[in-house]
Image (cartoon, rainbow, N blue to C red):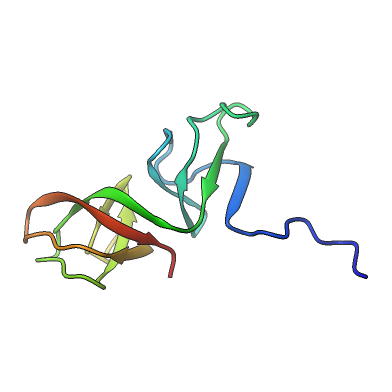
Length: 116
């Protein structure tokens, strides 16, 4: 049997530095490079090195979302840009899917499916 398996469950990744936002807090949508997730702890907490976090790469989370590119419908792709989830793909990184609706130019807390 192979002995080089690191994790048998790839949903959680620990002791990594978030690249967006620069300083992550528990519950924030984050990117580690291009890997989307939700910070499970504040930076440096939970046994992580200073500046590092543990993320959950899956699930459905309640998140504030901005209808920056127009109204958001269920199933629309969401992007993370400067710590903000929105539907504008011009500057952000693909992050997940909307499971609720947001009006054009509005901000609402909706269910969001992490990943793609």
